[in-house]
Image 1 (cartoon, rainbow, N blue to C red):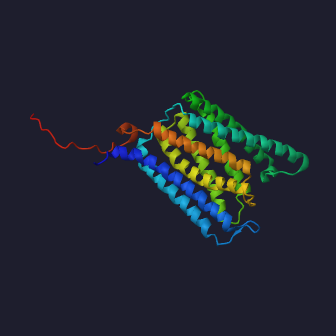
Image 2 (tube, helix red, strand yellow; image 1 turned 90 degrees about the vertical axis):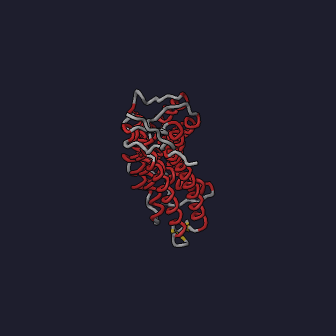
Image 3 (cartoon, rainbow, N blue to C red; image 1 turned 60 degrees about the vertical axis):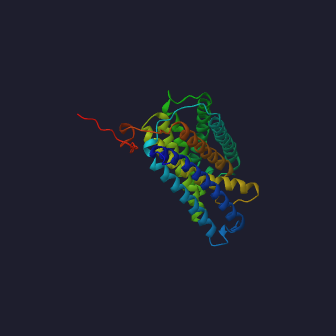
Amino acid sequence: MEKNWKELSFMNVGNALKVTCVGFGGGVFLRAVQMLYYFDYETGFYTDGGVMAWCSLIFVLLTSLLAGAMCFQSRRYFGPYVPRKNNTLGIVAVLSGAALVVSALLQTVDYIGYLKTGSSAYDSAERGVIHIAFLISCFLFGAVQLFVAKGFFQGKNVLEKVPLLYLVAVLWGIAYLILVYMFYAKSSSFVENFFAVAGGASVLLSLFYLCKLFAGVEEGSAAKRVFVAGIFAVVLTVTYSFSNLALLLLGKSYSGEIPAMIQLSSLGVSLFLLVFLMTFRKYSIRRNTTPKEGGEEPPARRSASRRFRPN
């Protein structure tokens, strides 16, 4: 039996999220194999000429493009954010917020030590303004995440009265991207640098459109872009940060790697985006649309028989 075109468009978004999970799952596996067996930690070069590194990058890019295209195909079905009680999203928001606040506290302690001794675990500490800006944005974004988590537990949009509060997340994304580009994208491999910078840029874009969605600005367009940018952010960041943190437990790290606490905070934000996308798909994707809401109305199914009535 032929499925309704509208239902297929709705299912496209769910399938896109499945492709996203396959993307970062396969990406983590390929990159872990690459860093365990085909990377020389003393010289910082690949032992296979970078074949596995390019395989991991091409895989995550293809899956991200496929998932993004599936969401774009169903773009007219994205609606406004509908707040619902969601304990899972609330827990992930609390964890991501806690990771950001702890990262800010550890960076503060380190920076105080740097001012006294001149030694720091962060390369960016030498540039005080940029480092302090990122430190403050970590703390503020973490506090906002904890505040937003309250709304997820209650099933309310707590940003309704303060719609621009989530701009703090965008400021954190800008500071994070600058920090990564200037201080930590210094690997000898283009692939490593691409994972770090492109992941940071995708996170920034997804947070910007998420801020618009929470504020109720161009909700349908913002929701579509949150999905497309969020998919790239999740796949690139989880592939890079999760594999790095897992390898760090095995004593494997390299000079171009972002400090662990910063990676943990960005990983928490990416996982929050993933759970948010899954929640949004469940409650805020319209199964039908009108010309005013989404442009041209999708083709309707024709009846098997047609009745004619005389004038």
